[in-house]
Length: 360
Ligand code: AMP
Image (tube, helix red, strand yellow):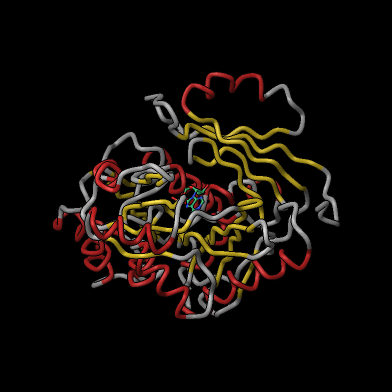
């Protein structure tokens, strides 16, 4: 167990790191953030910061020497940097788990390998293979980059008349994955924490609504039947147990119109769809991560309120002042100075009385 006063290293400087650092500070831990800019959201609230690119081996080694344990707030930290830290300090979740989540093909093959359903997919290495894969899977289909895609970046929809050459060019990477389009009723996610002792703490499944491929709103709990909620929870628990993850994992899933659950993506870190846990649960996803990586017992994931979390994207943040007049709204701003379209600038969690039964 790492006692309060120890230093938690956080690879990545975004809002997930910021909220992790704030949870760590509440327990008396210090955080040391590795970020590419001194004013990054997490750097603003950390005790120490290393400002360097992940490719700077000497900076990564200095960072490792200065921390007691390290975690990631961003799943695309290059494997070489993760392994460099792991050579001298515990990195939790383990680098090999992060490497599965960094690669959509490995991720889907891993899920299939443990009997968890995903949408049909094909690996594609060029426009000819793409045309062939589209004939196999049918259209519409979604072409994605195998690596480094998030928030819909690097994704191209193949409609009946989209040319393979054009789609390949728009995707813009050397390796792609073509996925059958999922006709979904809703998108849900489950966040589960696993402690160093193997204990699990699972949050209730939540429903996610996207706008332009970016999360817009999370509704907690998801409006799904208890059977679906139980099945989704069982999937998330199965995954963390399989990889013996220590930390927090978010599992994004589709509920199809036929009522099946297909896993879309894994994120072995706190997740945007878990921000509501700060204000509506006994223990937030960020506190669970701190507890897990420090070898402390996990806290209760029980919610005392239902909640709707709304992201403040780009210029929507200008309306922050009005949120303060709402009695049941909690405002979170990430300290980002540059406003860009679609950029996650903050979020609002609106608390609601807790309902027992899902409504759908
Ligand atoms: P991702 O980057 O994989 O999380 O995808 C971002 C969003 O695009 C998802 O949350 C869905 O709304 C949509 N999407 C991704 N893949 C598919 C698919 N195979 N079928 C339908 N919608 C998808």
